[in-house]
Length: 497
Image 1 (cartoon, rainbow, N blue to C red):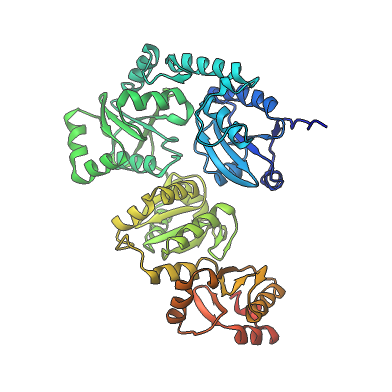
Image 2 (image 1 turned 45 degrees about the vertical axis):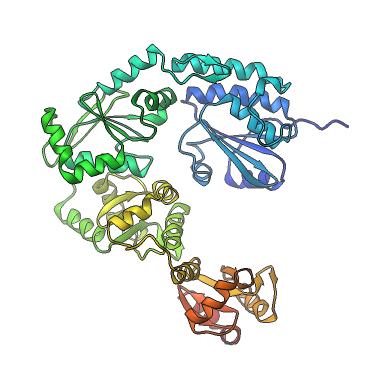
């Protein structure tokens, strides 16, 4: 009996997506946005592929309407595709590339073998003509030509003119991810902060809103990444160059030499090149007392996180994510629960010009929210900033640091033989049962899986046996102590203090 096809489906919640992924069938997830023309084109290919591969789930997620799902898969731009097999993510695809999409779907569905070249039109698929037609449409829009099924690397005259007009639309022009008020990456945030510190008026263009500009400018400027900063039509460079020029004073000299207009010291200046709107915006208007208080809080610790809840009891997933990252990086930090003080909660949004929480500050400088911190961690930029600010002093991680990171990877951390679901010794099993009986969530590490950790932790903790239970980085004890606390009713209070 022939298998029935799976219809295209819009995902409405993270729970729904998790359940479908859990079924283990091949699955393709399409993140899209209604305003993005490239998304619309790729959606046509996506729909045709759903006909070709009836045993594959084809799911759609409106990226901006489902931020939790988008954040889970680090979606920074649309269209964006994630591929699953056997309940696990196996591949990703960013951007409008019909040929690659068709080939990756075929590989997930096992119609072609890994390593075979992209050849969607020759796969015998109904989607073949749609793939080629979409490539042509995208080529026209981007001012590019079709060459063997791939987009030619040259730039059409229409796109070249558009890019030149954008670059020259303001004396200082920043092509960035997001907007100055809501940057979508840490590097863009840094350059925005530098320009504001230099007190220059600048225009900006959000490259997420136009994929033809995003891809075309890389070729036009021969600069592969963003942000890109221009002055009087000349490319100055990206984030690293802007930072170096700013710190050396060279950036100010360039602006002066080019006659770039500066704003008064209490003005924030941005202009949106997309709309032509913008100009000078007056200072925040916060009272001096509140501004002083916020400044004091921001500078009260080398690293401080303004979050919802506390590190051990986050009240939102985004705050939890930043806490986890800081702990993974073994960074000591302080926190402020903005749910306990509405004056700080509302005032800090204005003071920092950042409208959401959490907000992470290092040495008084806003780093950003969860998306930016996550991106910086993945790229290595977070560690670089911490080194520059003197928060950490070496890029090398010692074995002791590794043990410390494991110990604090969860507020309640159990080093045991085996896993909670399959303990490999009676003492470990007893501690697991005591923690579960108390209703406590805990992390675990199987010391049988790593002999170096097994032997090293004995010396580090000065405790010769296993299991070992830690709370907030401090050793509680072994099996006997845990059972004693459990029998006396003190286990839950001890691990909740």
